[in-house]
Image (cartoon, rainbow, N blue to C red; front, side, top):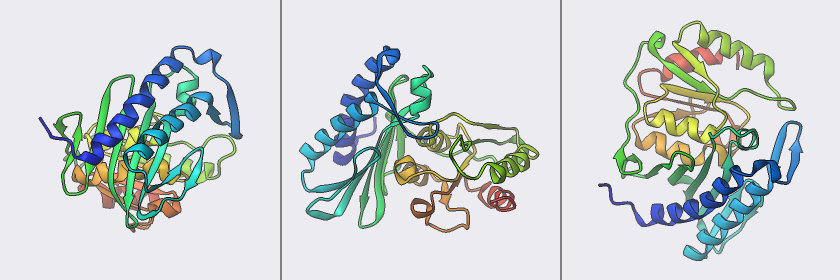
Length: 264
């Protein structure tokens, strides 16, 4: 059994408490108050409650750390080296439509580098986690990315821009090109889980543009500790700034990035 580091235990406690509320609200989703952040971009009472629970728990455990949260935004801390990055409900649209595929994502950024991350899928009780230099795990099982290299055998995940989002035409070009060479493309609706599933070898790669730091932060460290490769669309390390990400095993990174660059 893998011994979880202290930071991961802090994240797991916060995610577990928030998850209980999310699961309860998911069972009564028709009663939730919902507002719009933008066209086809929703925030529910469940998002806000989960974020408050996570904030309260993390603040209690590490009172001096700062925060970057999806709903509350940036909250400075006296410790300028450490910052929690929190998405309390990744997959809100799935959640509001009764689709049981959503997650909680918590990462710790230390000195401008993602140091630890946890992604929790409450419905299936799957907790993906990693700390820098310690490997990646699903609950207590070690994770490794897949070893497939032939694109015709590979299945990829992506995110599709919805109403109000830019990039519809470039995405259609990317999708067409990846479809032509792969075993399939899936759009599941939670970027954090797309990254976690790629780290677990369920997908051979994942790409998306126009997402936020809290969507990808935890997944980046989990992918890397599982032996994967994570870059922006230019092959660099500016994913958090550009909002564009390609995450794969080592055998497909160059090929997938070359395909996607045609339409990016």
